[in-house]
Image (cartoon, rainbow, N blue to C red):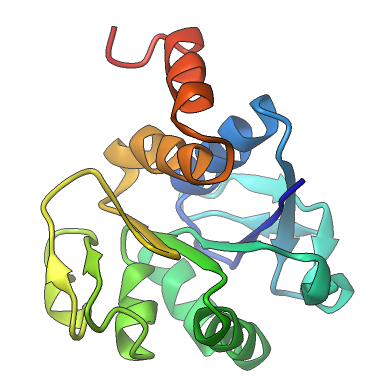
Length: 183
């Protein structure tokens, strides 16, 4: 069974972060919401406080299969400024483990060189920061171990792409039907 960690920084985009957590938990993927701060409550970009499952310092990355980085302008900047998280992002990418990012957060992967030769997307205006990527104007783009999403309005597409990667197309399609997605 896969273990996923979604990382929350002050200013995260609530819909992007919580949608992927919700969808993964609906299909029984072990998913932890992780604060990169020293606080268990992290406030999103629209002043919505969310209670985390654990703090970054409590994560055993040897037990984690997927890292997910939600967007939000301030949230993305705060994620990228967290050196210990960025070390793990680099280690995951180097090892071929899965790293996912949506909205502004794919820019982090671009800045760190993890999108070279990959297909990817980000929030409109961030495409130039996806260094080395082939830009694909789709709601969500999966290319090997990297999954990227365009923005809040694409959060379900992004979450379903992660579900498909972890559980297969049939599970993804069953979930899409259950949540009345594109019906």
